[in-house]
Amino acid sequence: MPLPASRPADRYSPLYFLASLGAGGLAASFFMFLMFWVPHPGQSVPVFEDLARALATGGPALQALVVTSALAIAVLAYQNLRLLVWNIAQYRRFKASPAWSTFTSGNAETQRLALPLALAMSVNVSFVLGMVFVPGLWGVVEFLFPLALIAFGLIGALALVQIGAFLGRVMTRAGSFDMAQHNSFAQILPAFALSMVAVGFAAPAAMSGVPLTAGISLIGLTFFGMAALLYTLLAAIIGFNAILQHGTAREAAPTLVVVVPILTVLGITFLRQNHGMTHSFDAEIAAVETLIFLSRLLAVQVLVLMLGLMVLARLDYWRDFVFGPRESAGAYALVCPGVALSVMLHFWLNDGLVGAGLIDRFSVGYWAISALAVAVQLGTLGFTFYLNRRHFGRSRAAGRVPAE
Image 1 (cartoon, rainbow, N blue to C red):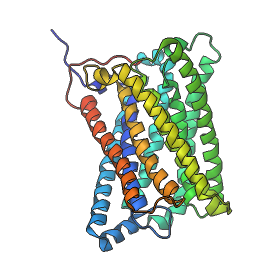
Image 2 (cartoon, rainbow, N blue to C red; image 1 turned 135 degrees about the vertical axis):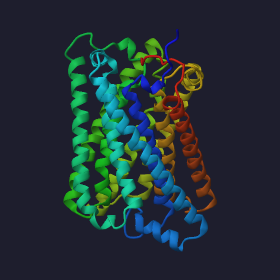
Image 3 (cartoon, rainbow, N blue to C red; image 1 turned 60 degrees about the vertical axis):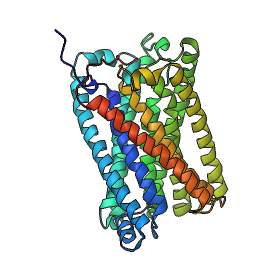
């Protein structure tokens, strides 16, 4: 007699934290509309009062934009927090199961870093919710920044402890890391977590009017940003070497494009750093420098996406693990590049092209590039809903392949 069917998500993997992460990233992507298209004089980001003013005095298009963005942010933030709570409960059960010992003795142990990664994203999403829905937030924001720094400091400490446990094991116990099974960029997940902590640290640097708060923020973002860059470089080199020897692991193939969101997150981190240096410490940074910086990041992202999508196609990943009979929590790693590319296009356009005077704001060229960013975003949104139905919807008979 056949066993009862179950949802893929019932066969838990810490990679399901990426479902929470993706929802949070999409919520932040809708905030880009408000940030770049809604006037917000007096502060670097739009807040509730700016949105209320737009609804009261703006035209129908602006009003529709504000309402649609706010609703999307609310729905996706709810998904982000709901999936975070679900994952934490499942993760605790997983730690108490016999499978935990096997999990923490192999290459897959770094999947634990999906926890601090998702936590950091949820803190960022909470700030987005506050800016959009809480009246008077800007009046008390200087009191909130130290709390944010403490929160990201604790999350960063958790990430470092988990990384230390993994590196301590593989660097002191011969044979505890299987290079033949490292034929992907799966080991780059810790760098993603560190970069998310860095961008959280960077927010007070860009927005605080208190030099001490901005200074602590700059130091924190520099530490975690450099740690993320170093870990990305080392993990990518080792992973690429294993790929050349053994080919790309099929189920882990989506990790090839995780570099894309890391670059977007670090790009925003260093943009905030530059803003903080200019705003609080009178540094001078030319607009063309920002354009070149963002253009370089975007170029690398496009090249990585071209390579990654080619490999995914040749491995028939889409046919088997996304639209076919096999299930993999790692498919959620494909949400992150879409969100990241959309957000990067907004920053490249507004802080890069418009900032350097190459394109006029709200010109035909401006809306053409914006349309591309929106198309990528909406495509990613639809893909996310599809994955959620597939993994968290009604029971499926299809089996899930264990993570490689």
